[in-house]
Length: 254
Image (cartoon, rainbow, N blue to C red; front, side, top):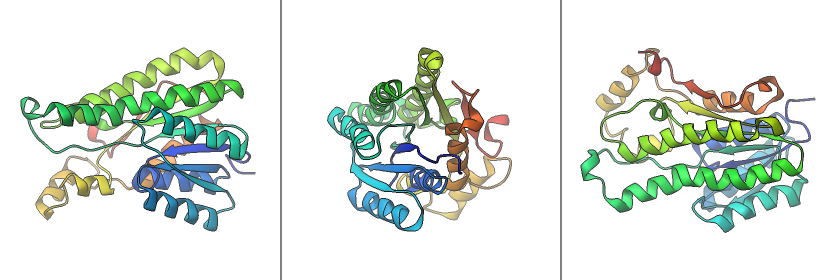
């Protein structure tokens, strides 16, 4: 027996990066997985790889977390394909370009809040309903170190991730007595496509500066976050709810 035998998980943003590693880790531990991503090509490839290389099953669903119908279809797929929903990882998110608060356009602000914060809430309300029908479950939301501190030039992203941490705590309190646990992870800077898309890999000097922000002197790896998420979703963390766990190489300890 492995930790997630006879369970079903959904993971948003699981076509790449932390989400993909998380979906793979849950599958390797026995869970059937709904791979949810707005990127069909990456998502389908991730689901196929998981199904071919683990003993679990995987189903891809194209999901835009700003669309209620997509989110509902994601959870309905988990229940119809596998019978229930036991684990949910709300990982889909957007980075942002660096610019001062007063320079951020309303469109850019709204887009990041819609995906990173409101998207998590959309997922939570459907996931929680499904879990309540089946006697409980475990949810992890991907926040960030910027859900606990600020940094120059990232107002919308920082606000969205602070919101995820707060939302996690309230949802944990709302459903603790009904055996639905809700936690968050707060990664430091992780080697993922999001860093590249934000332009933070443009030169070695910038990468060195990012490394130096972490007392361990390096960036994190997606697998390190996936392992923490899997633990929070497992029975080993049965007394953990409302936690915003930092996996950050010491960043927040300065």
